Length: 44
Image 1 (cartoon, rainbow, N blue to C red):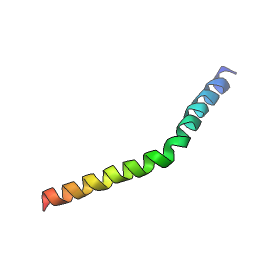
Image 2 (cartoon, rainbow, N blue to C red):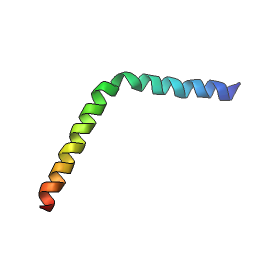
Image 3 (tube, one colour):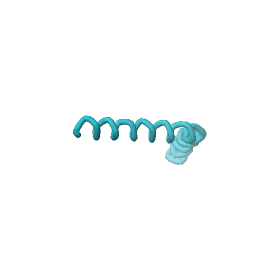
């Protein structure tokens, strides 16, 4: 029973993060593209 309760706690943590994904993913992608472009210019 305690394992099942612990599983629902981790599911709640994941579900609490899901609403922020539309904001986190584009920002993370933009940062990644910027870093890759910076590395490409620096190495050229």
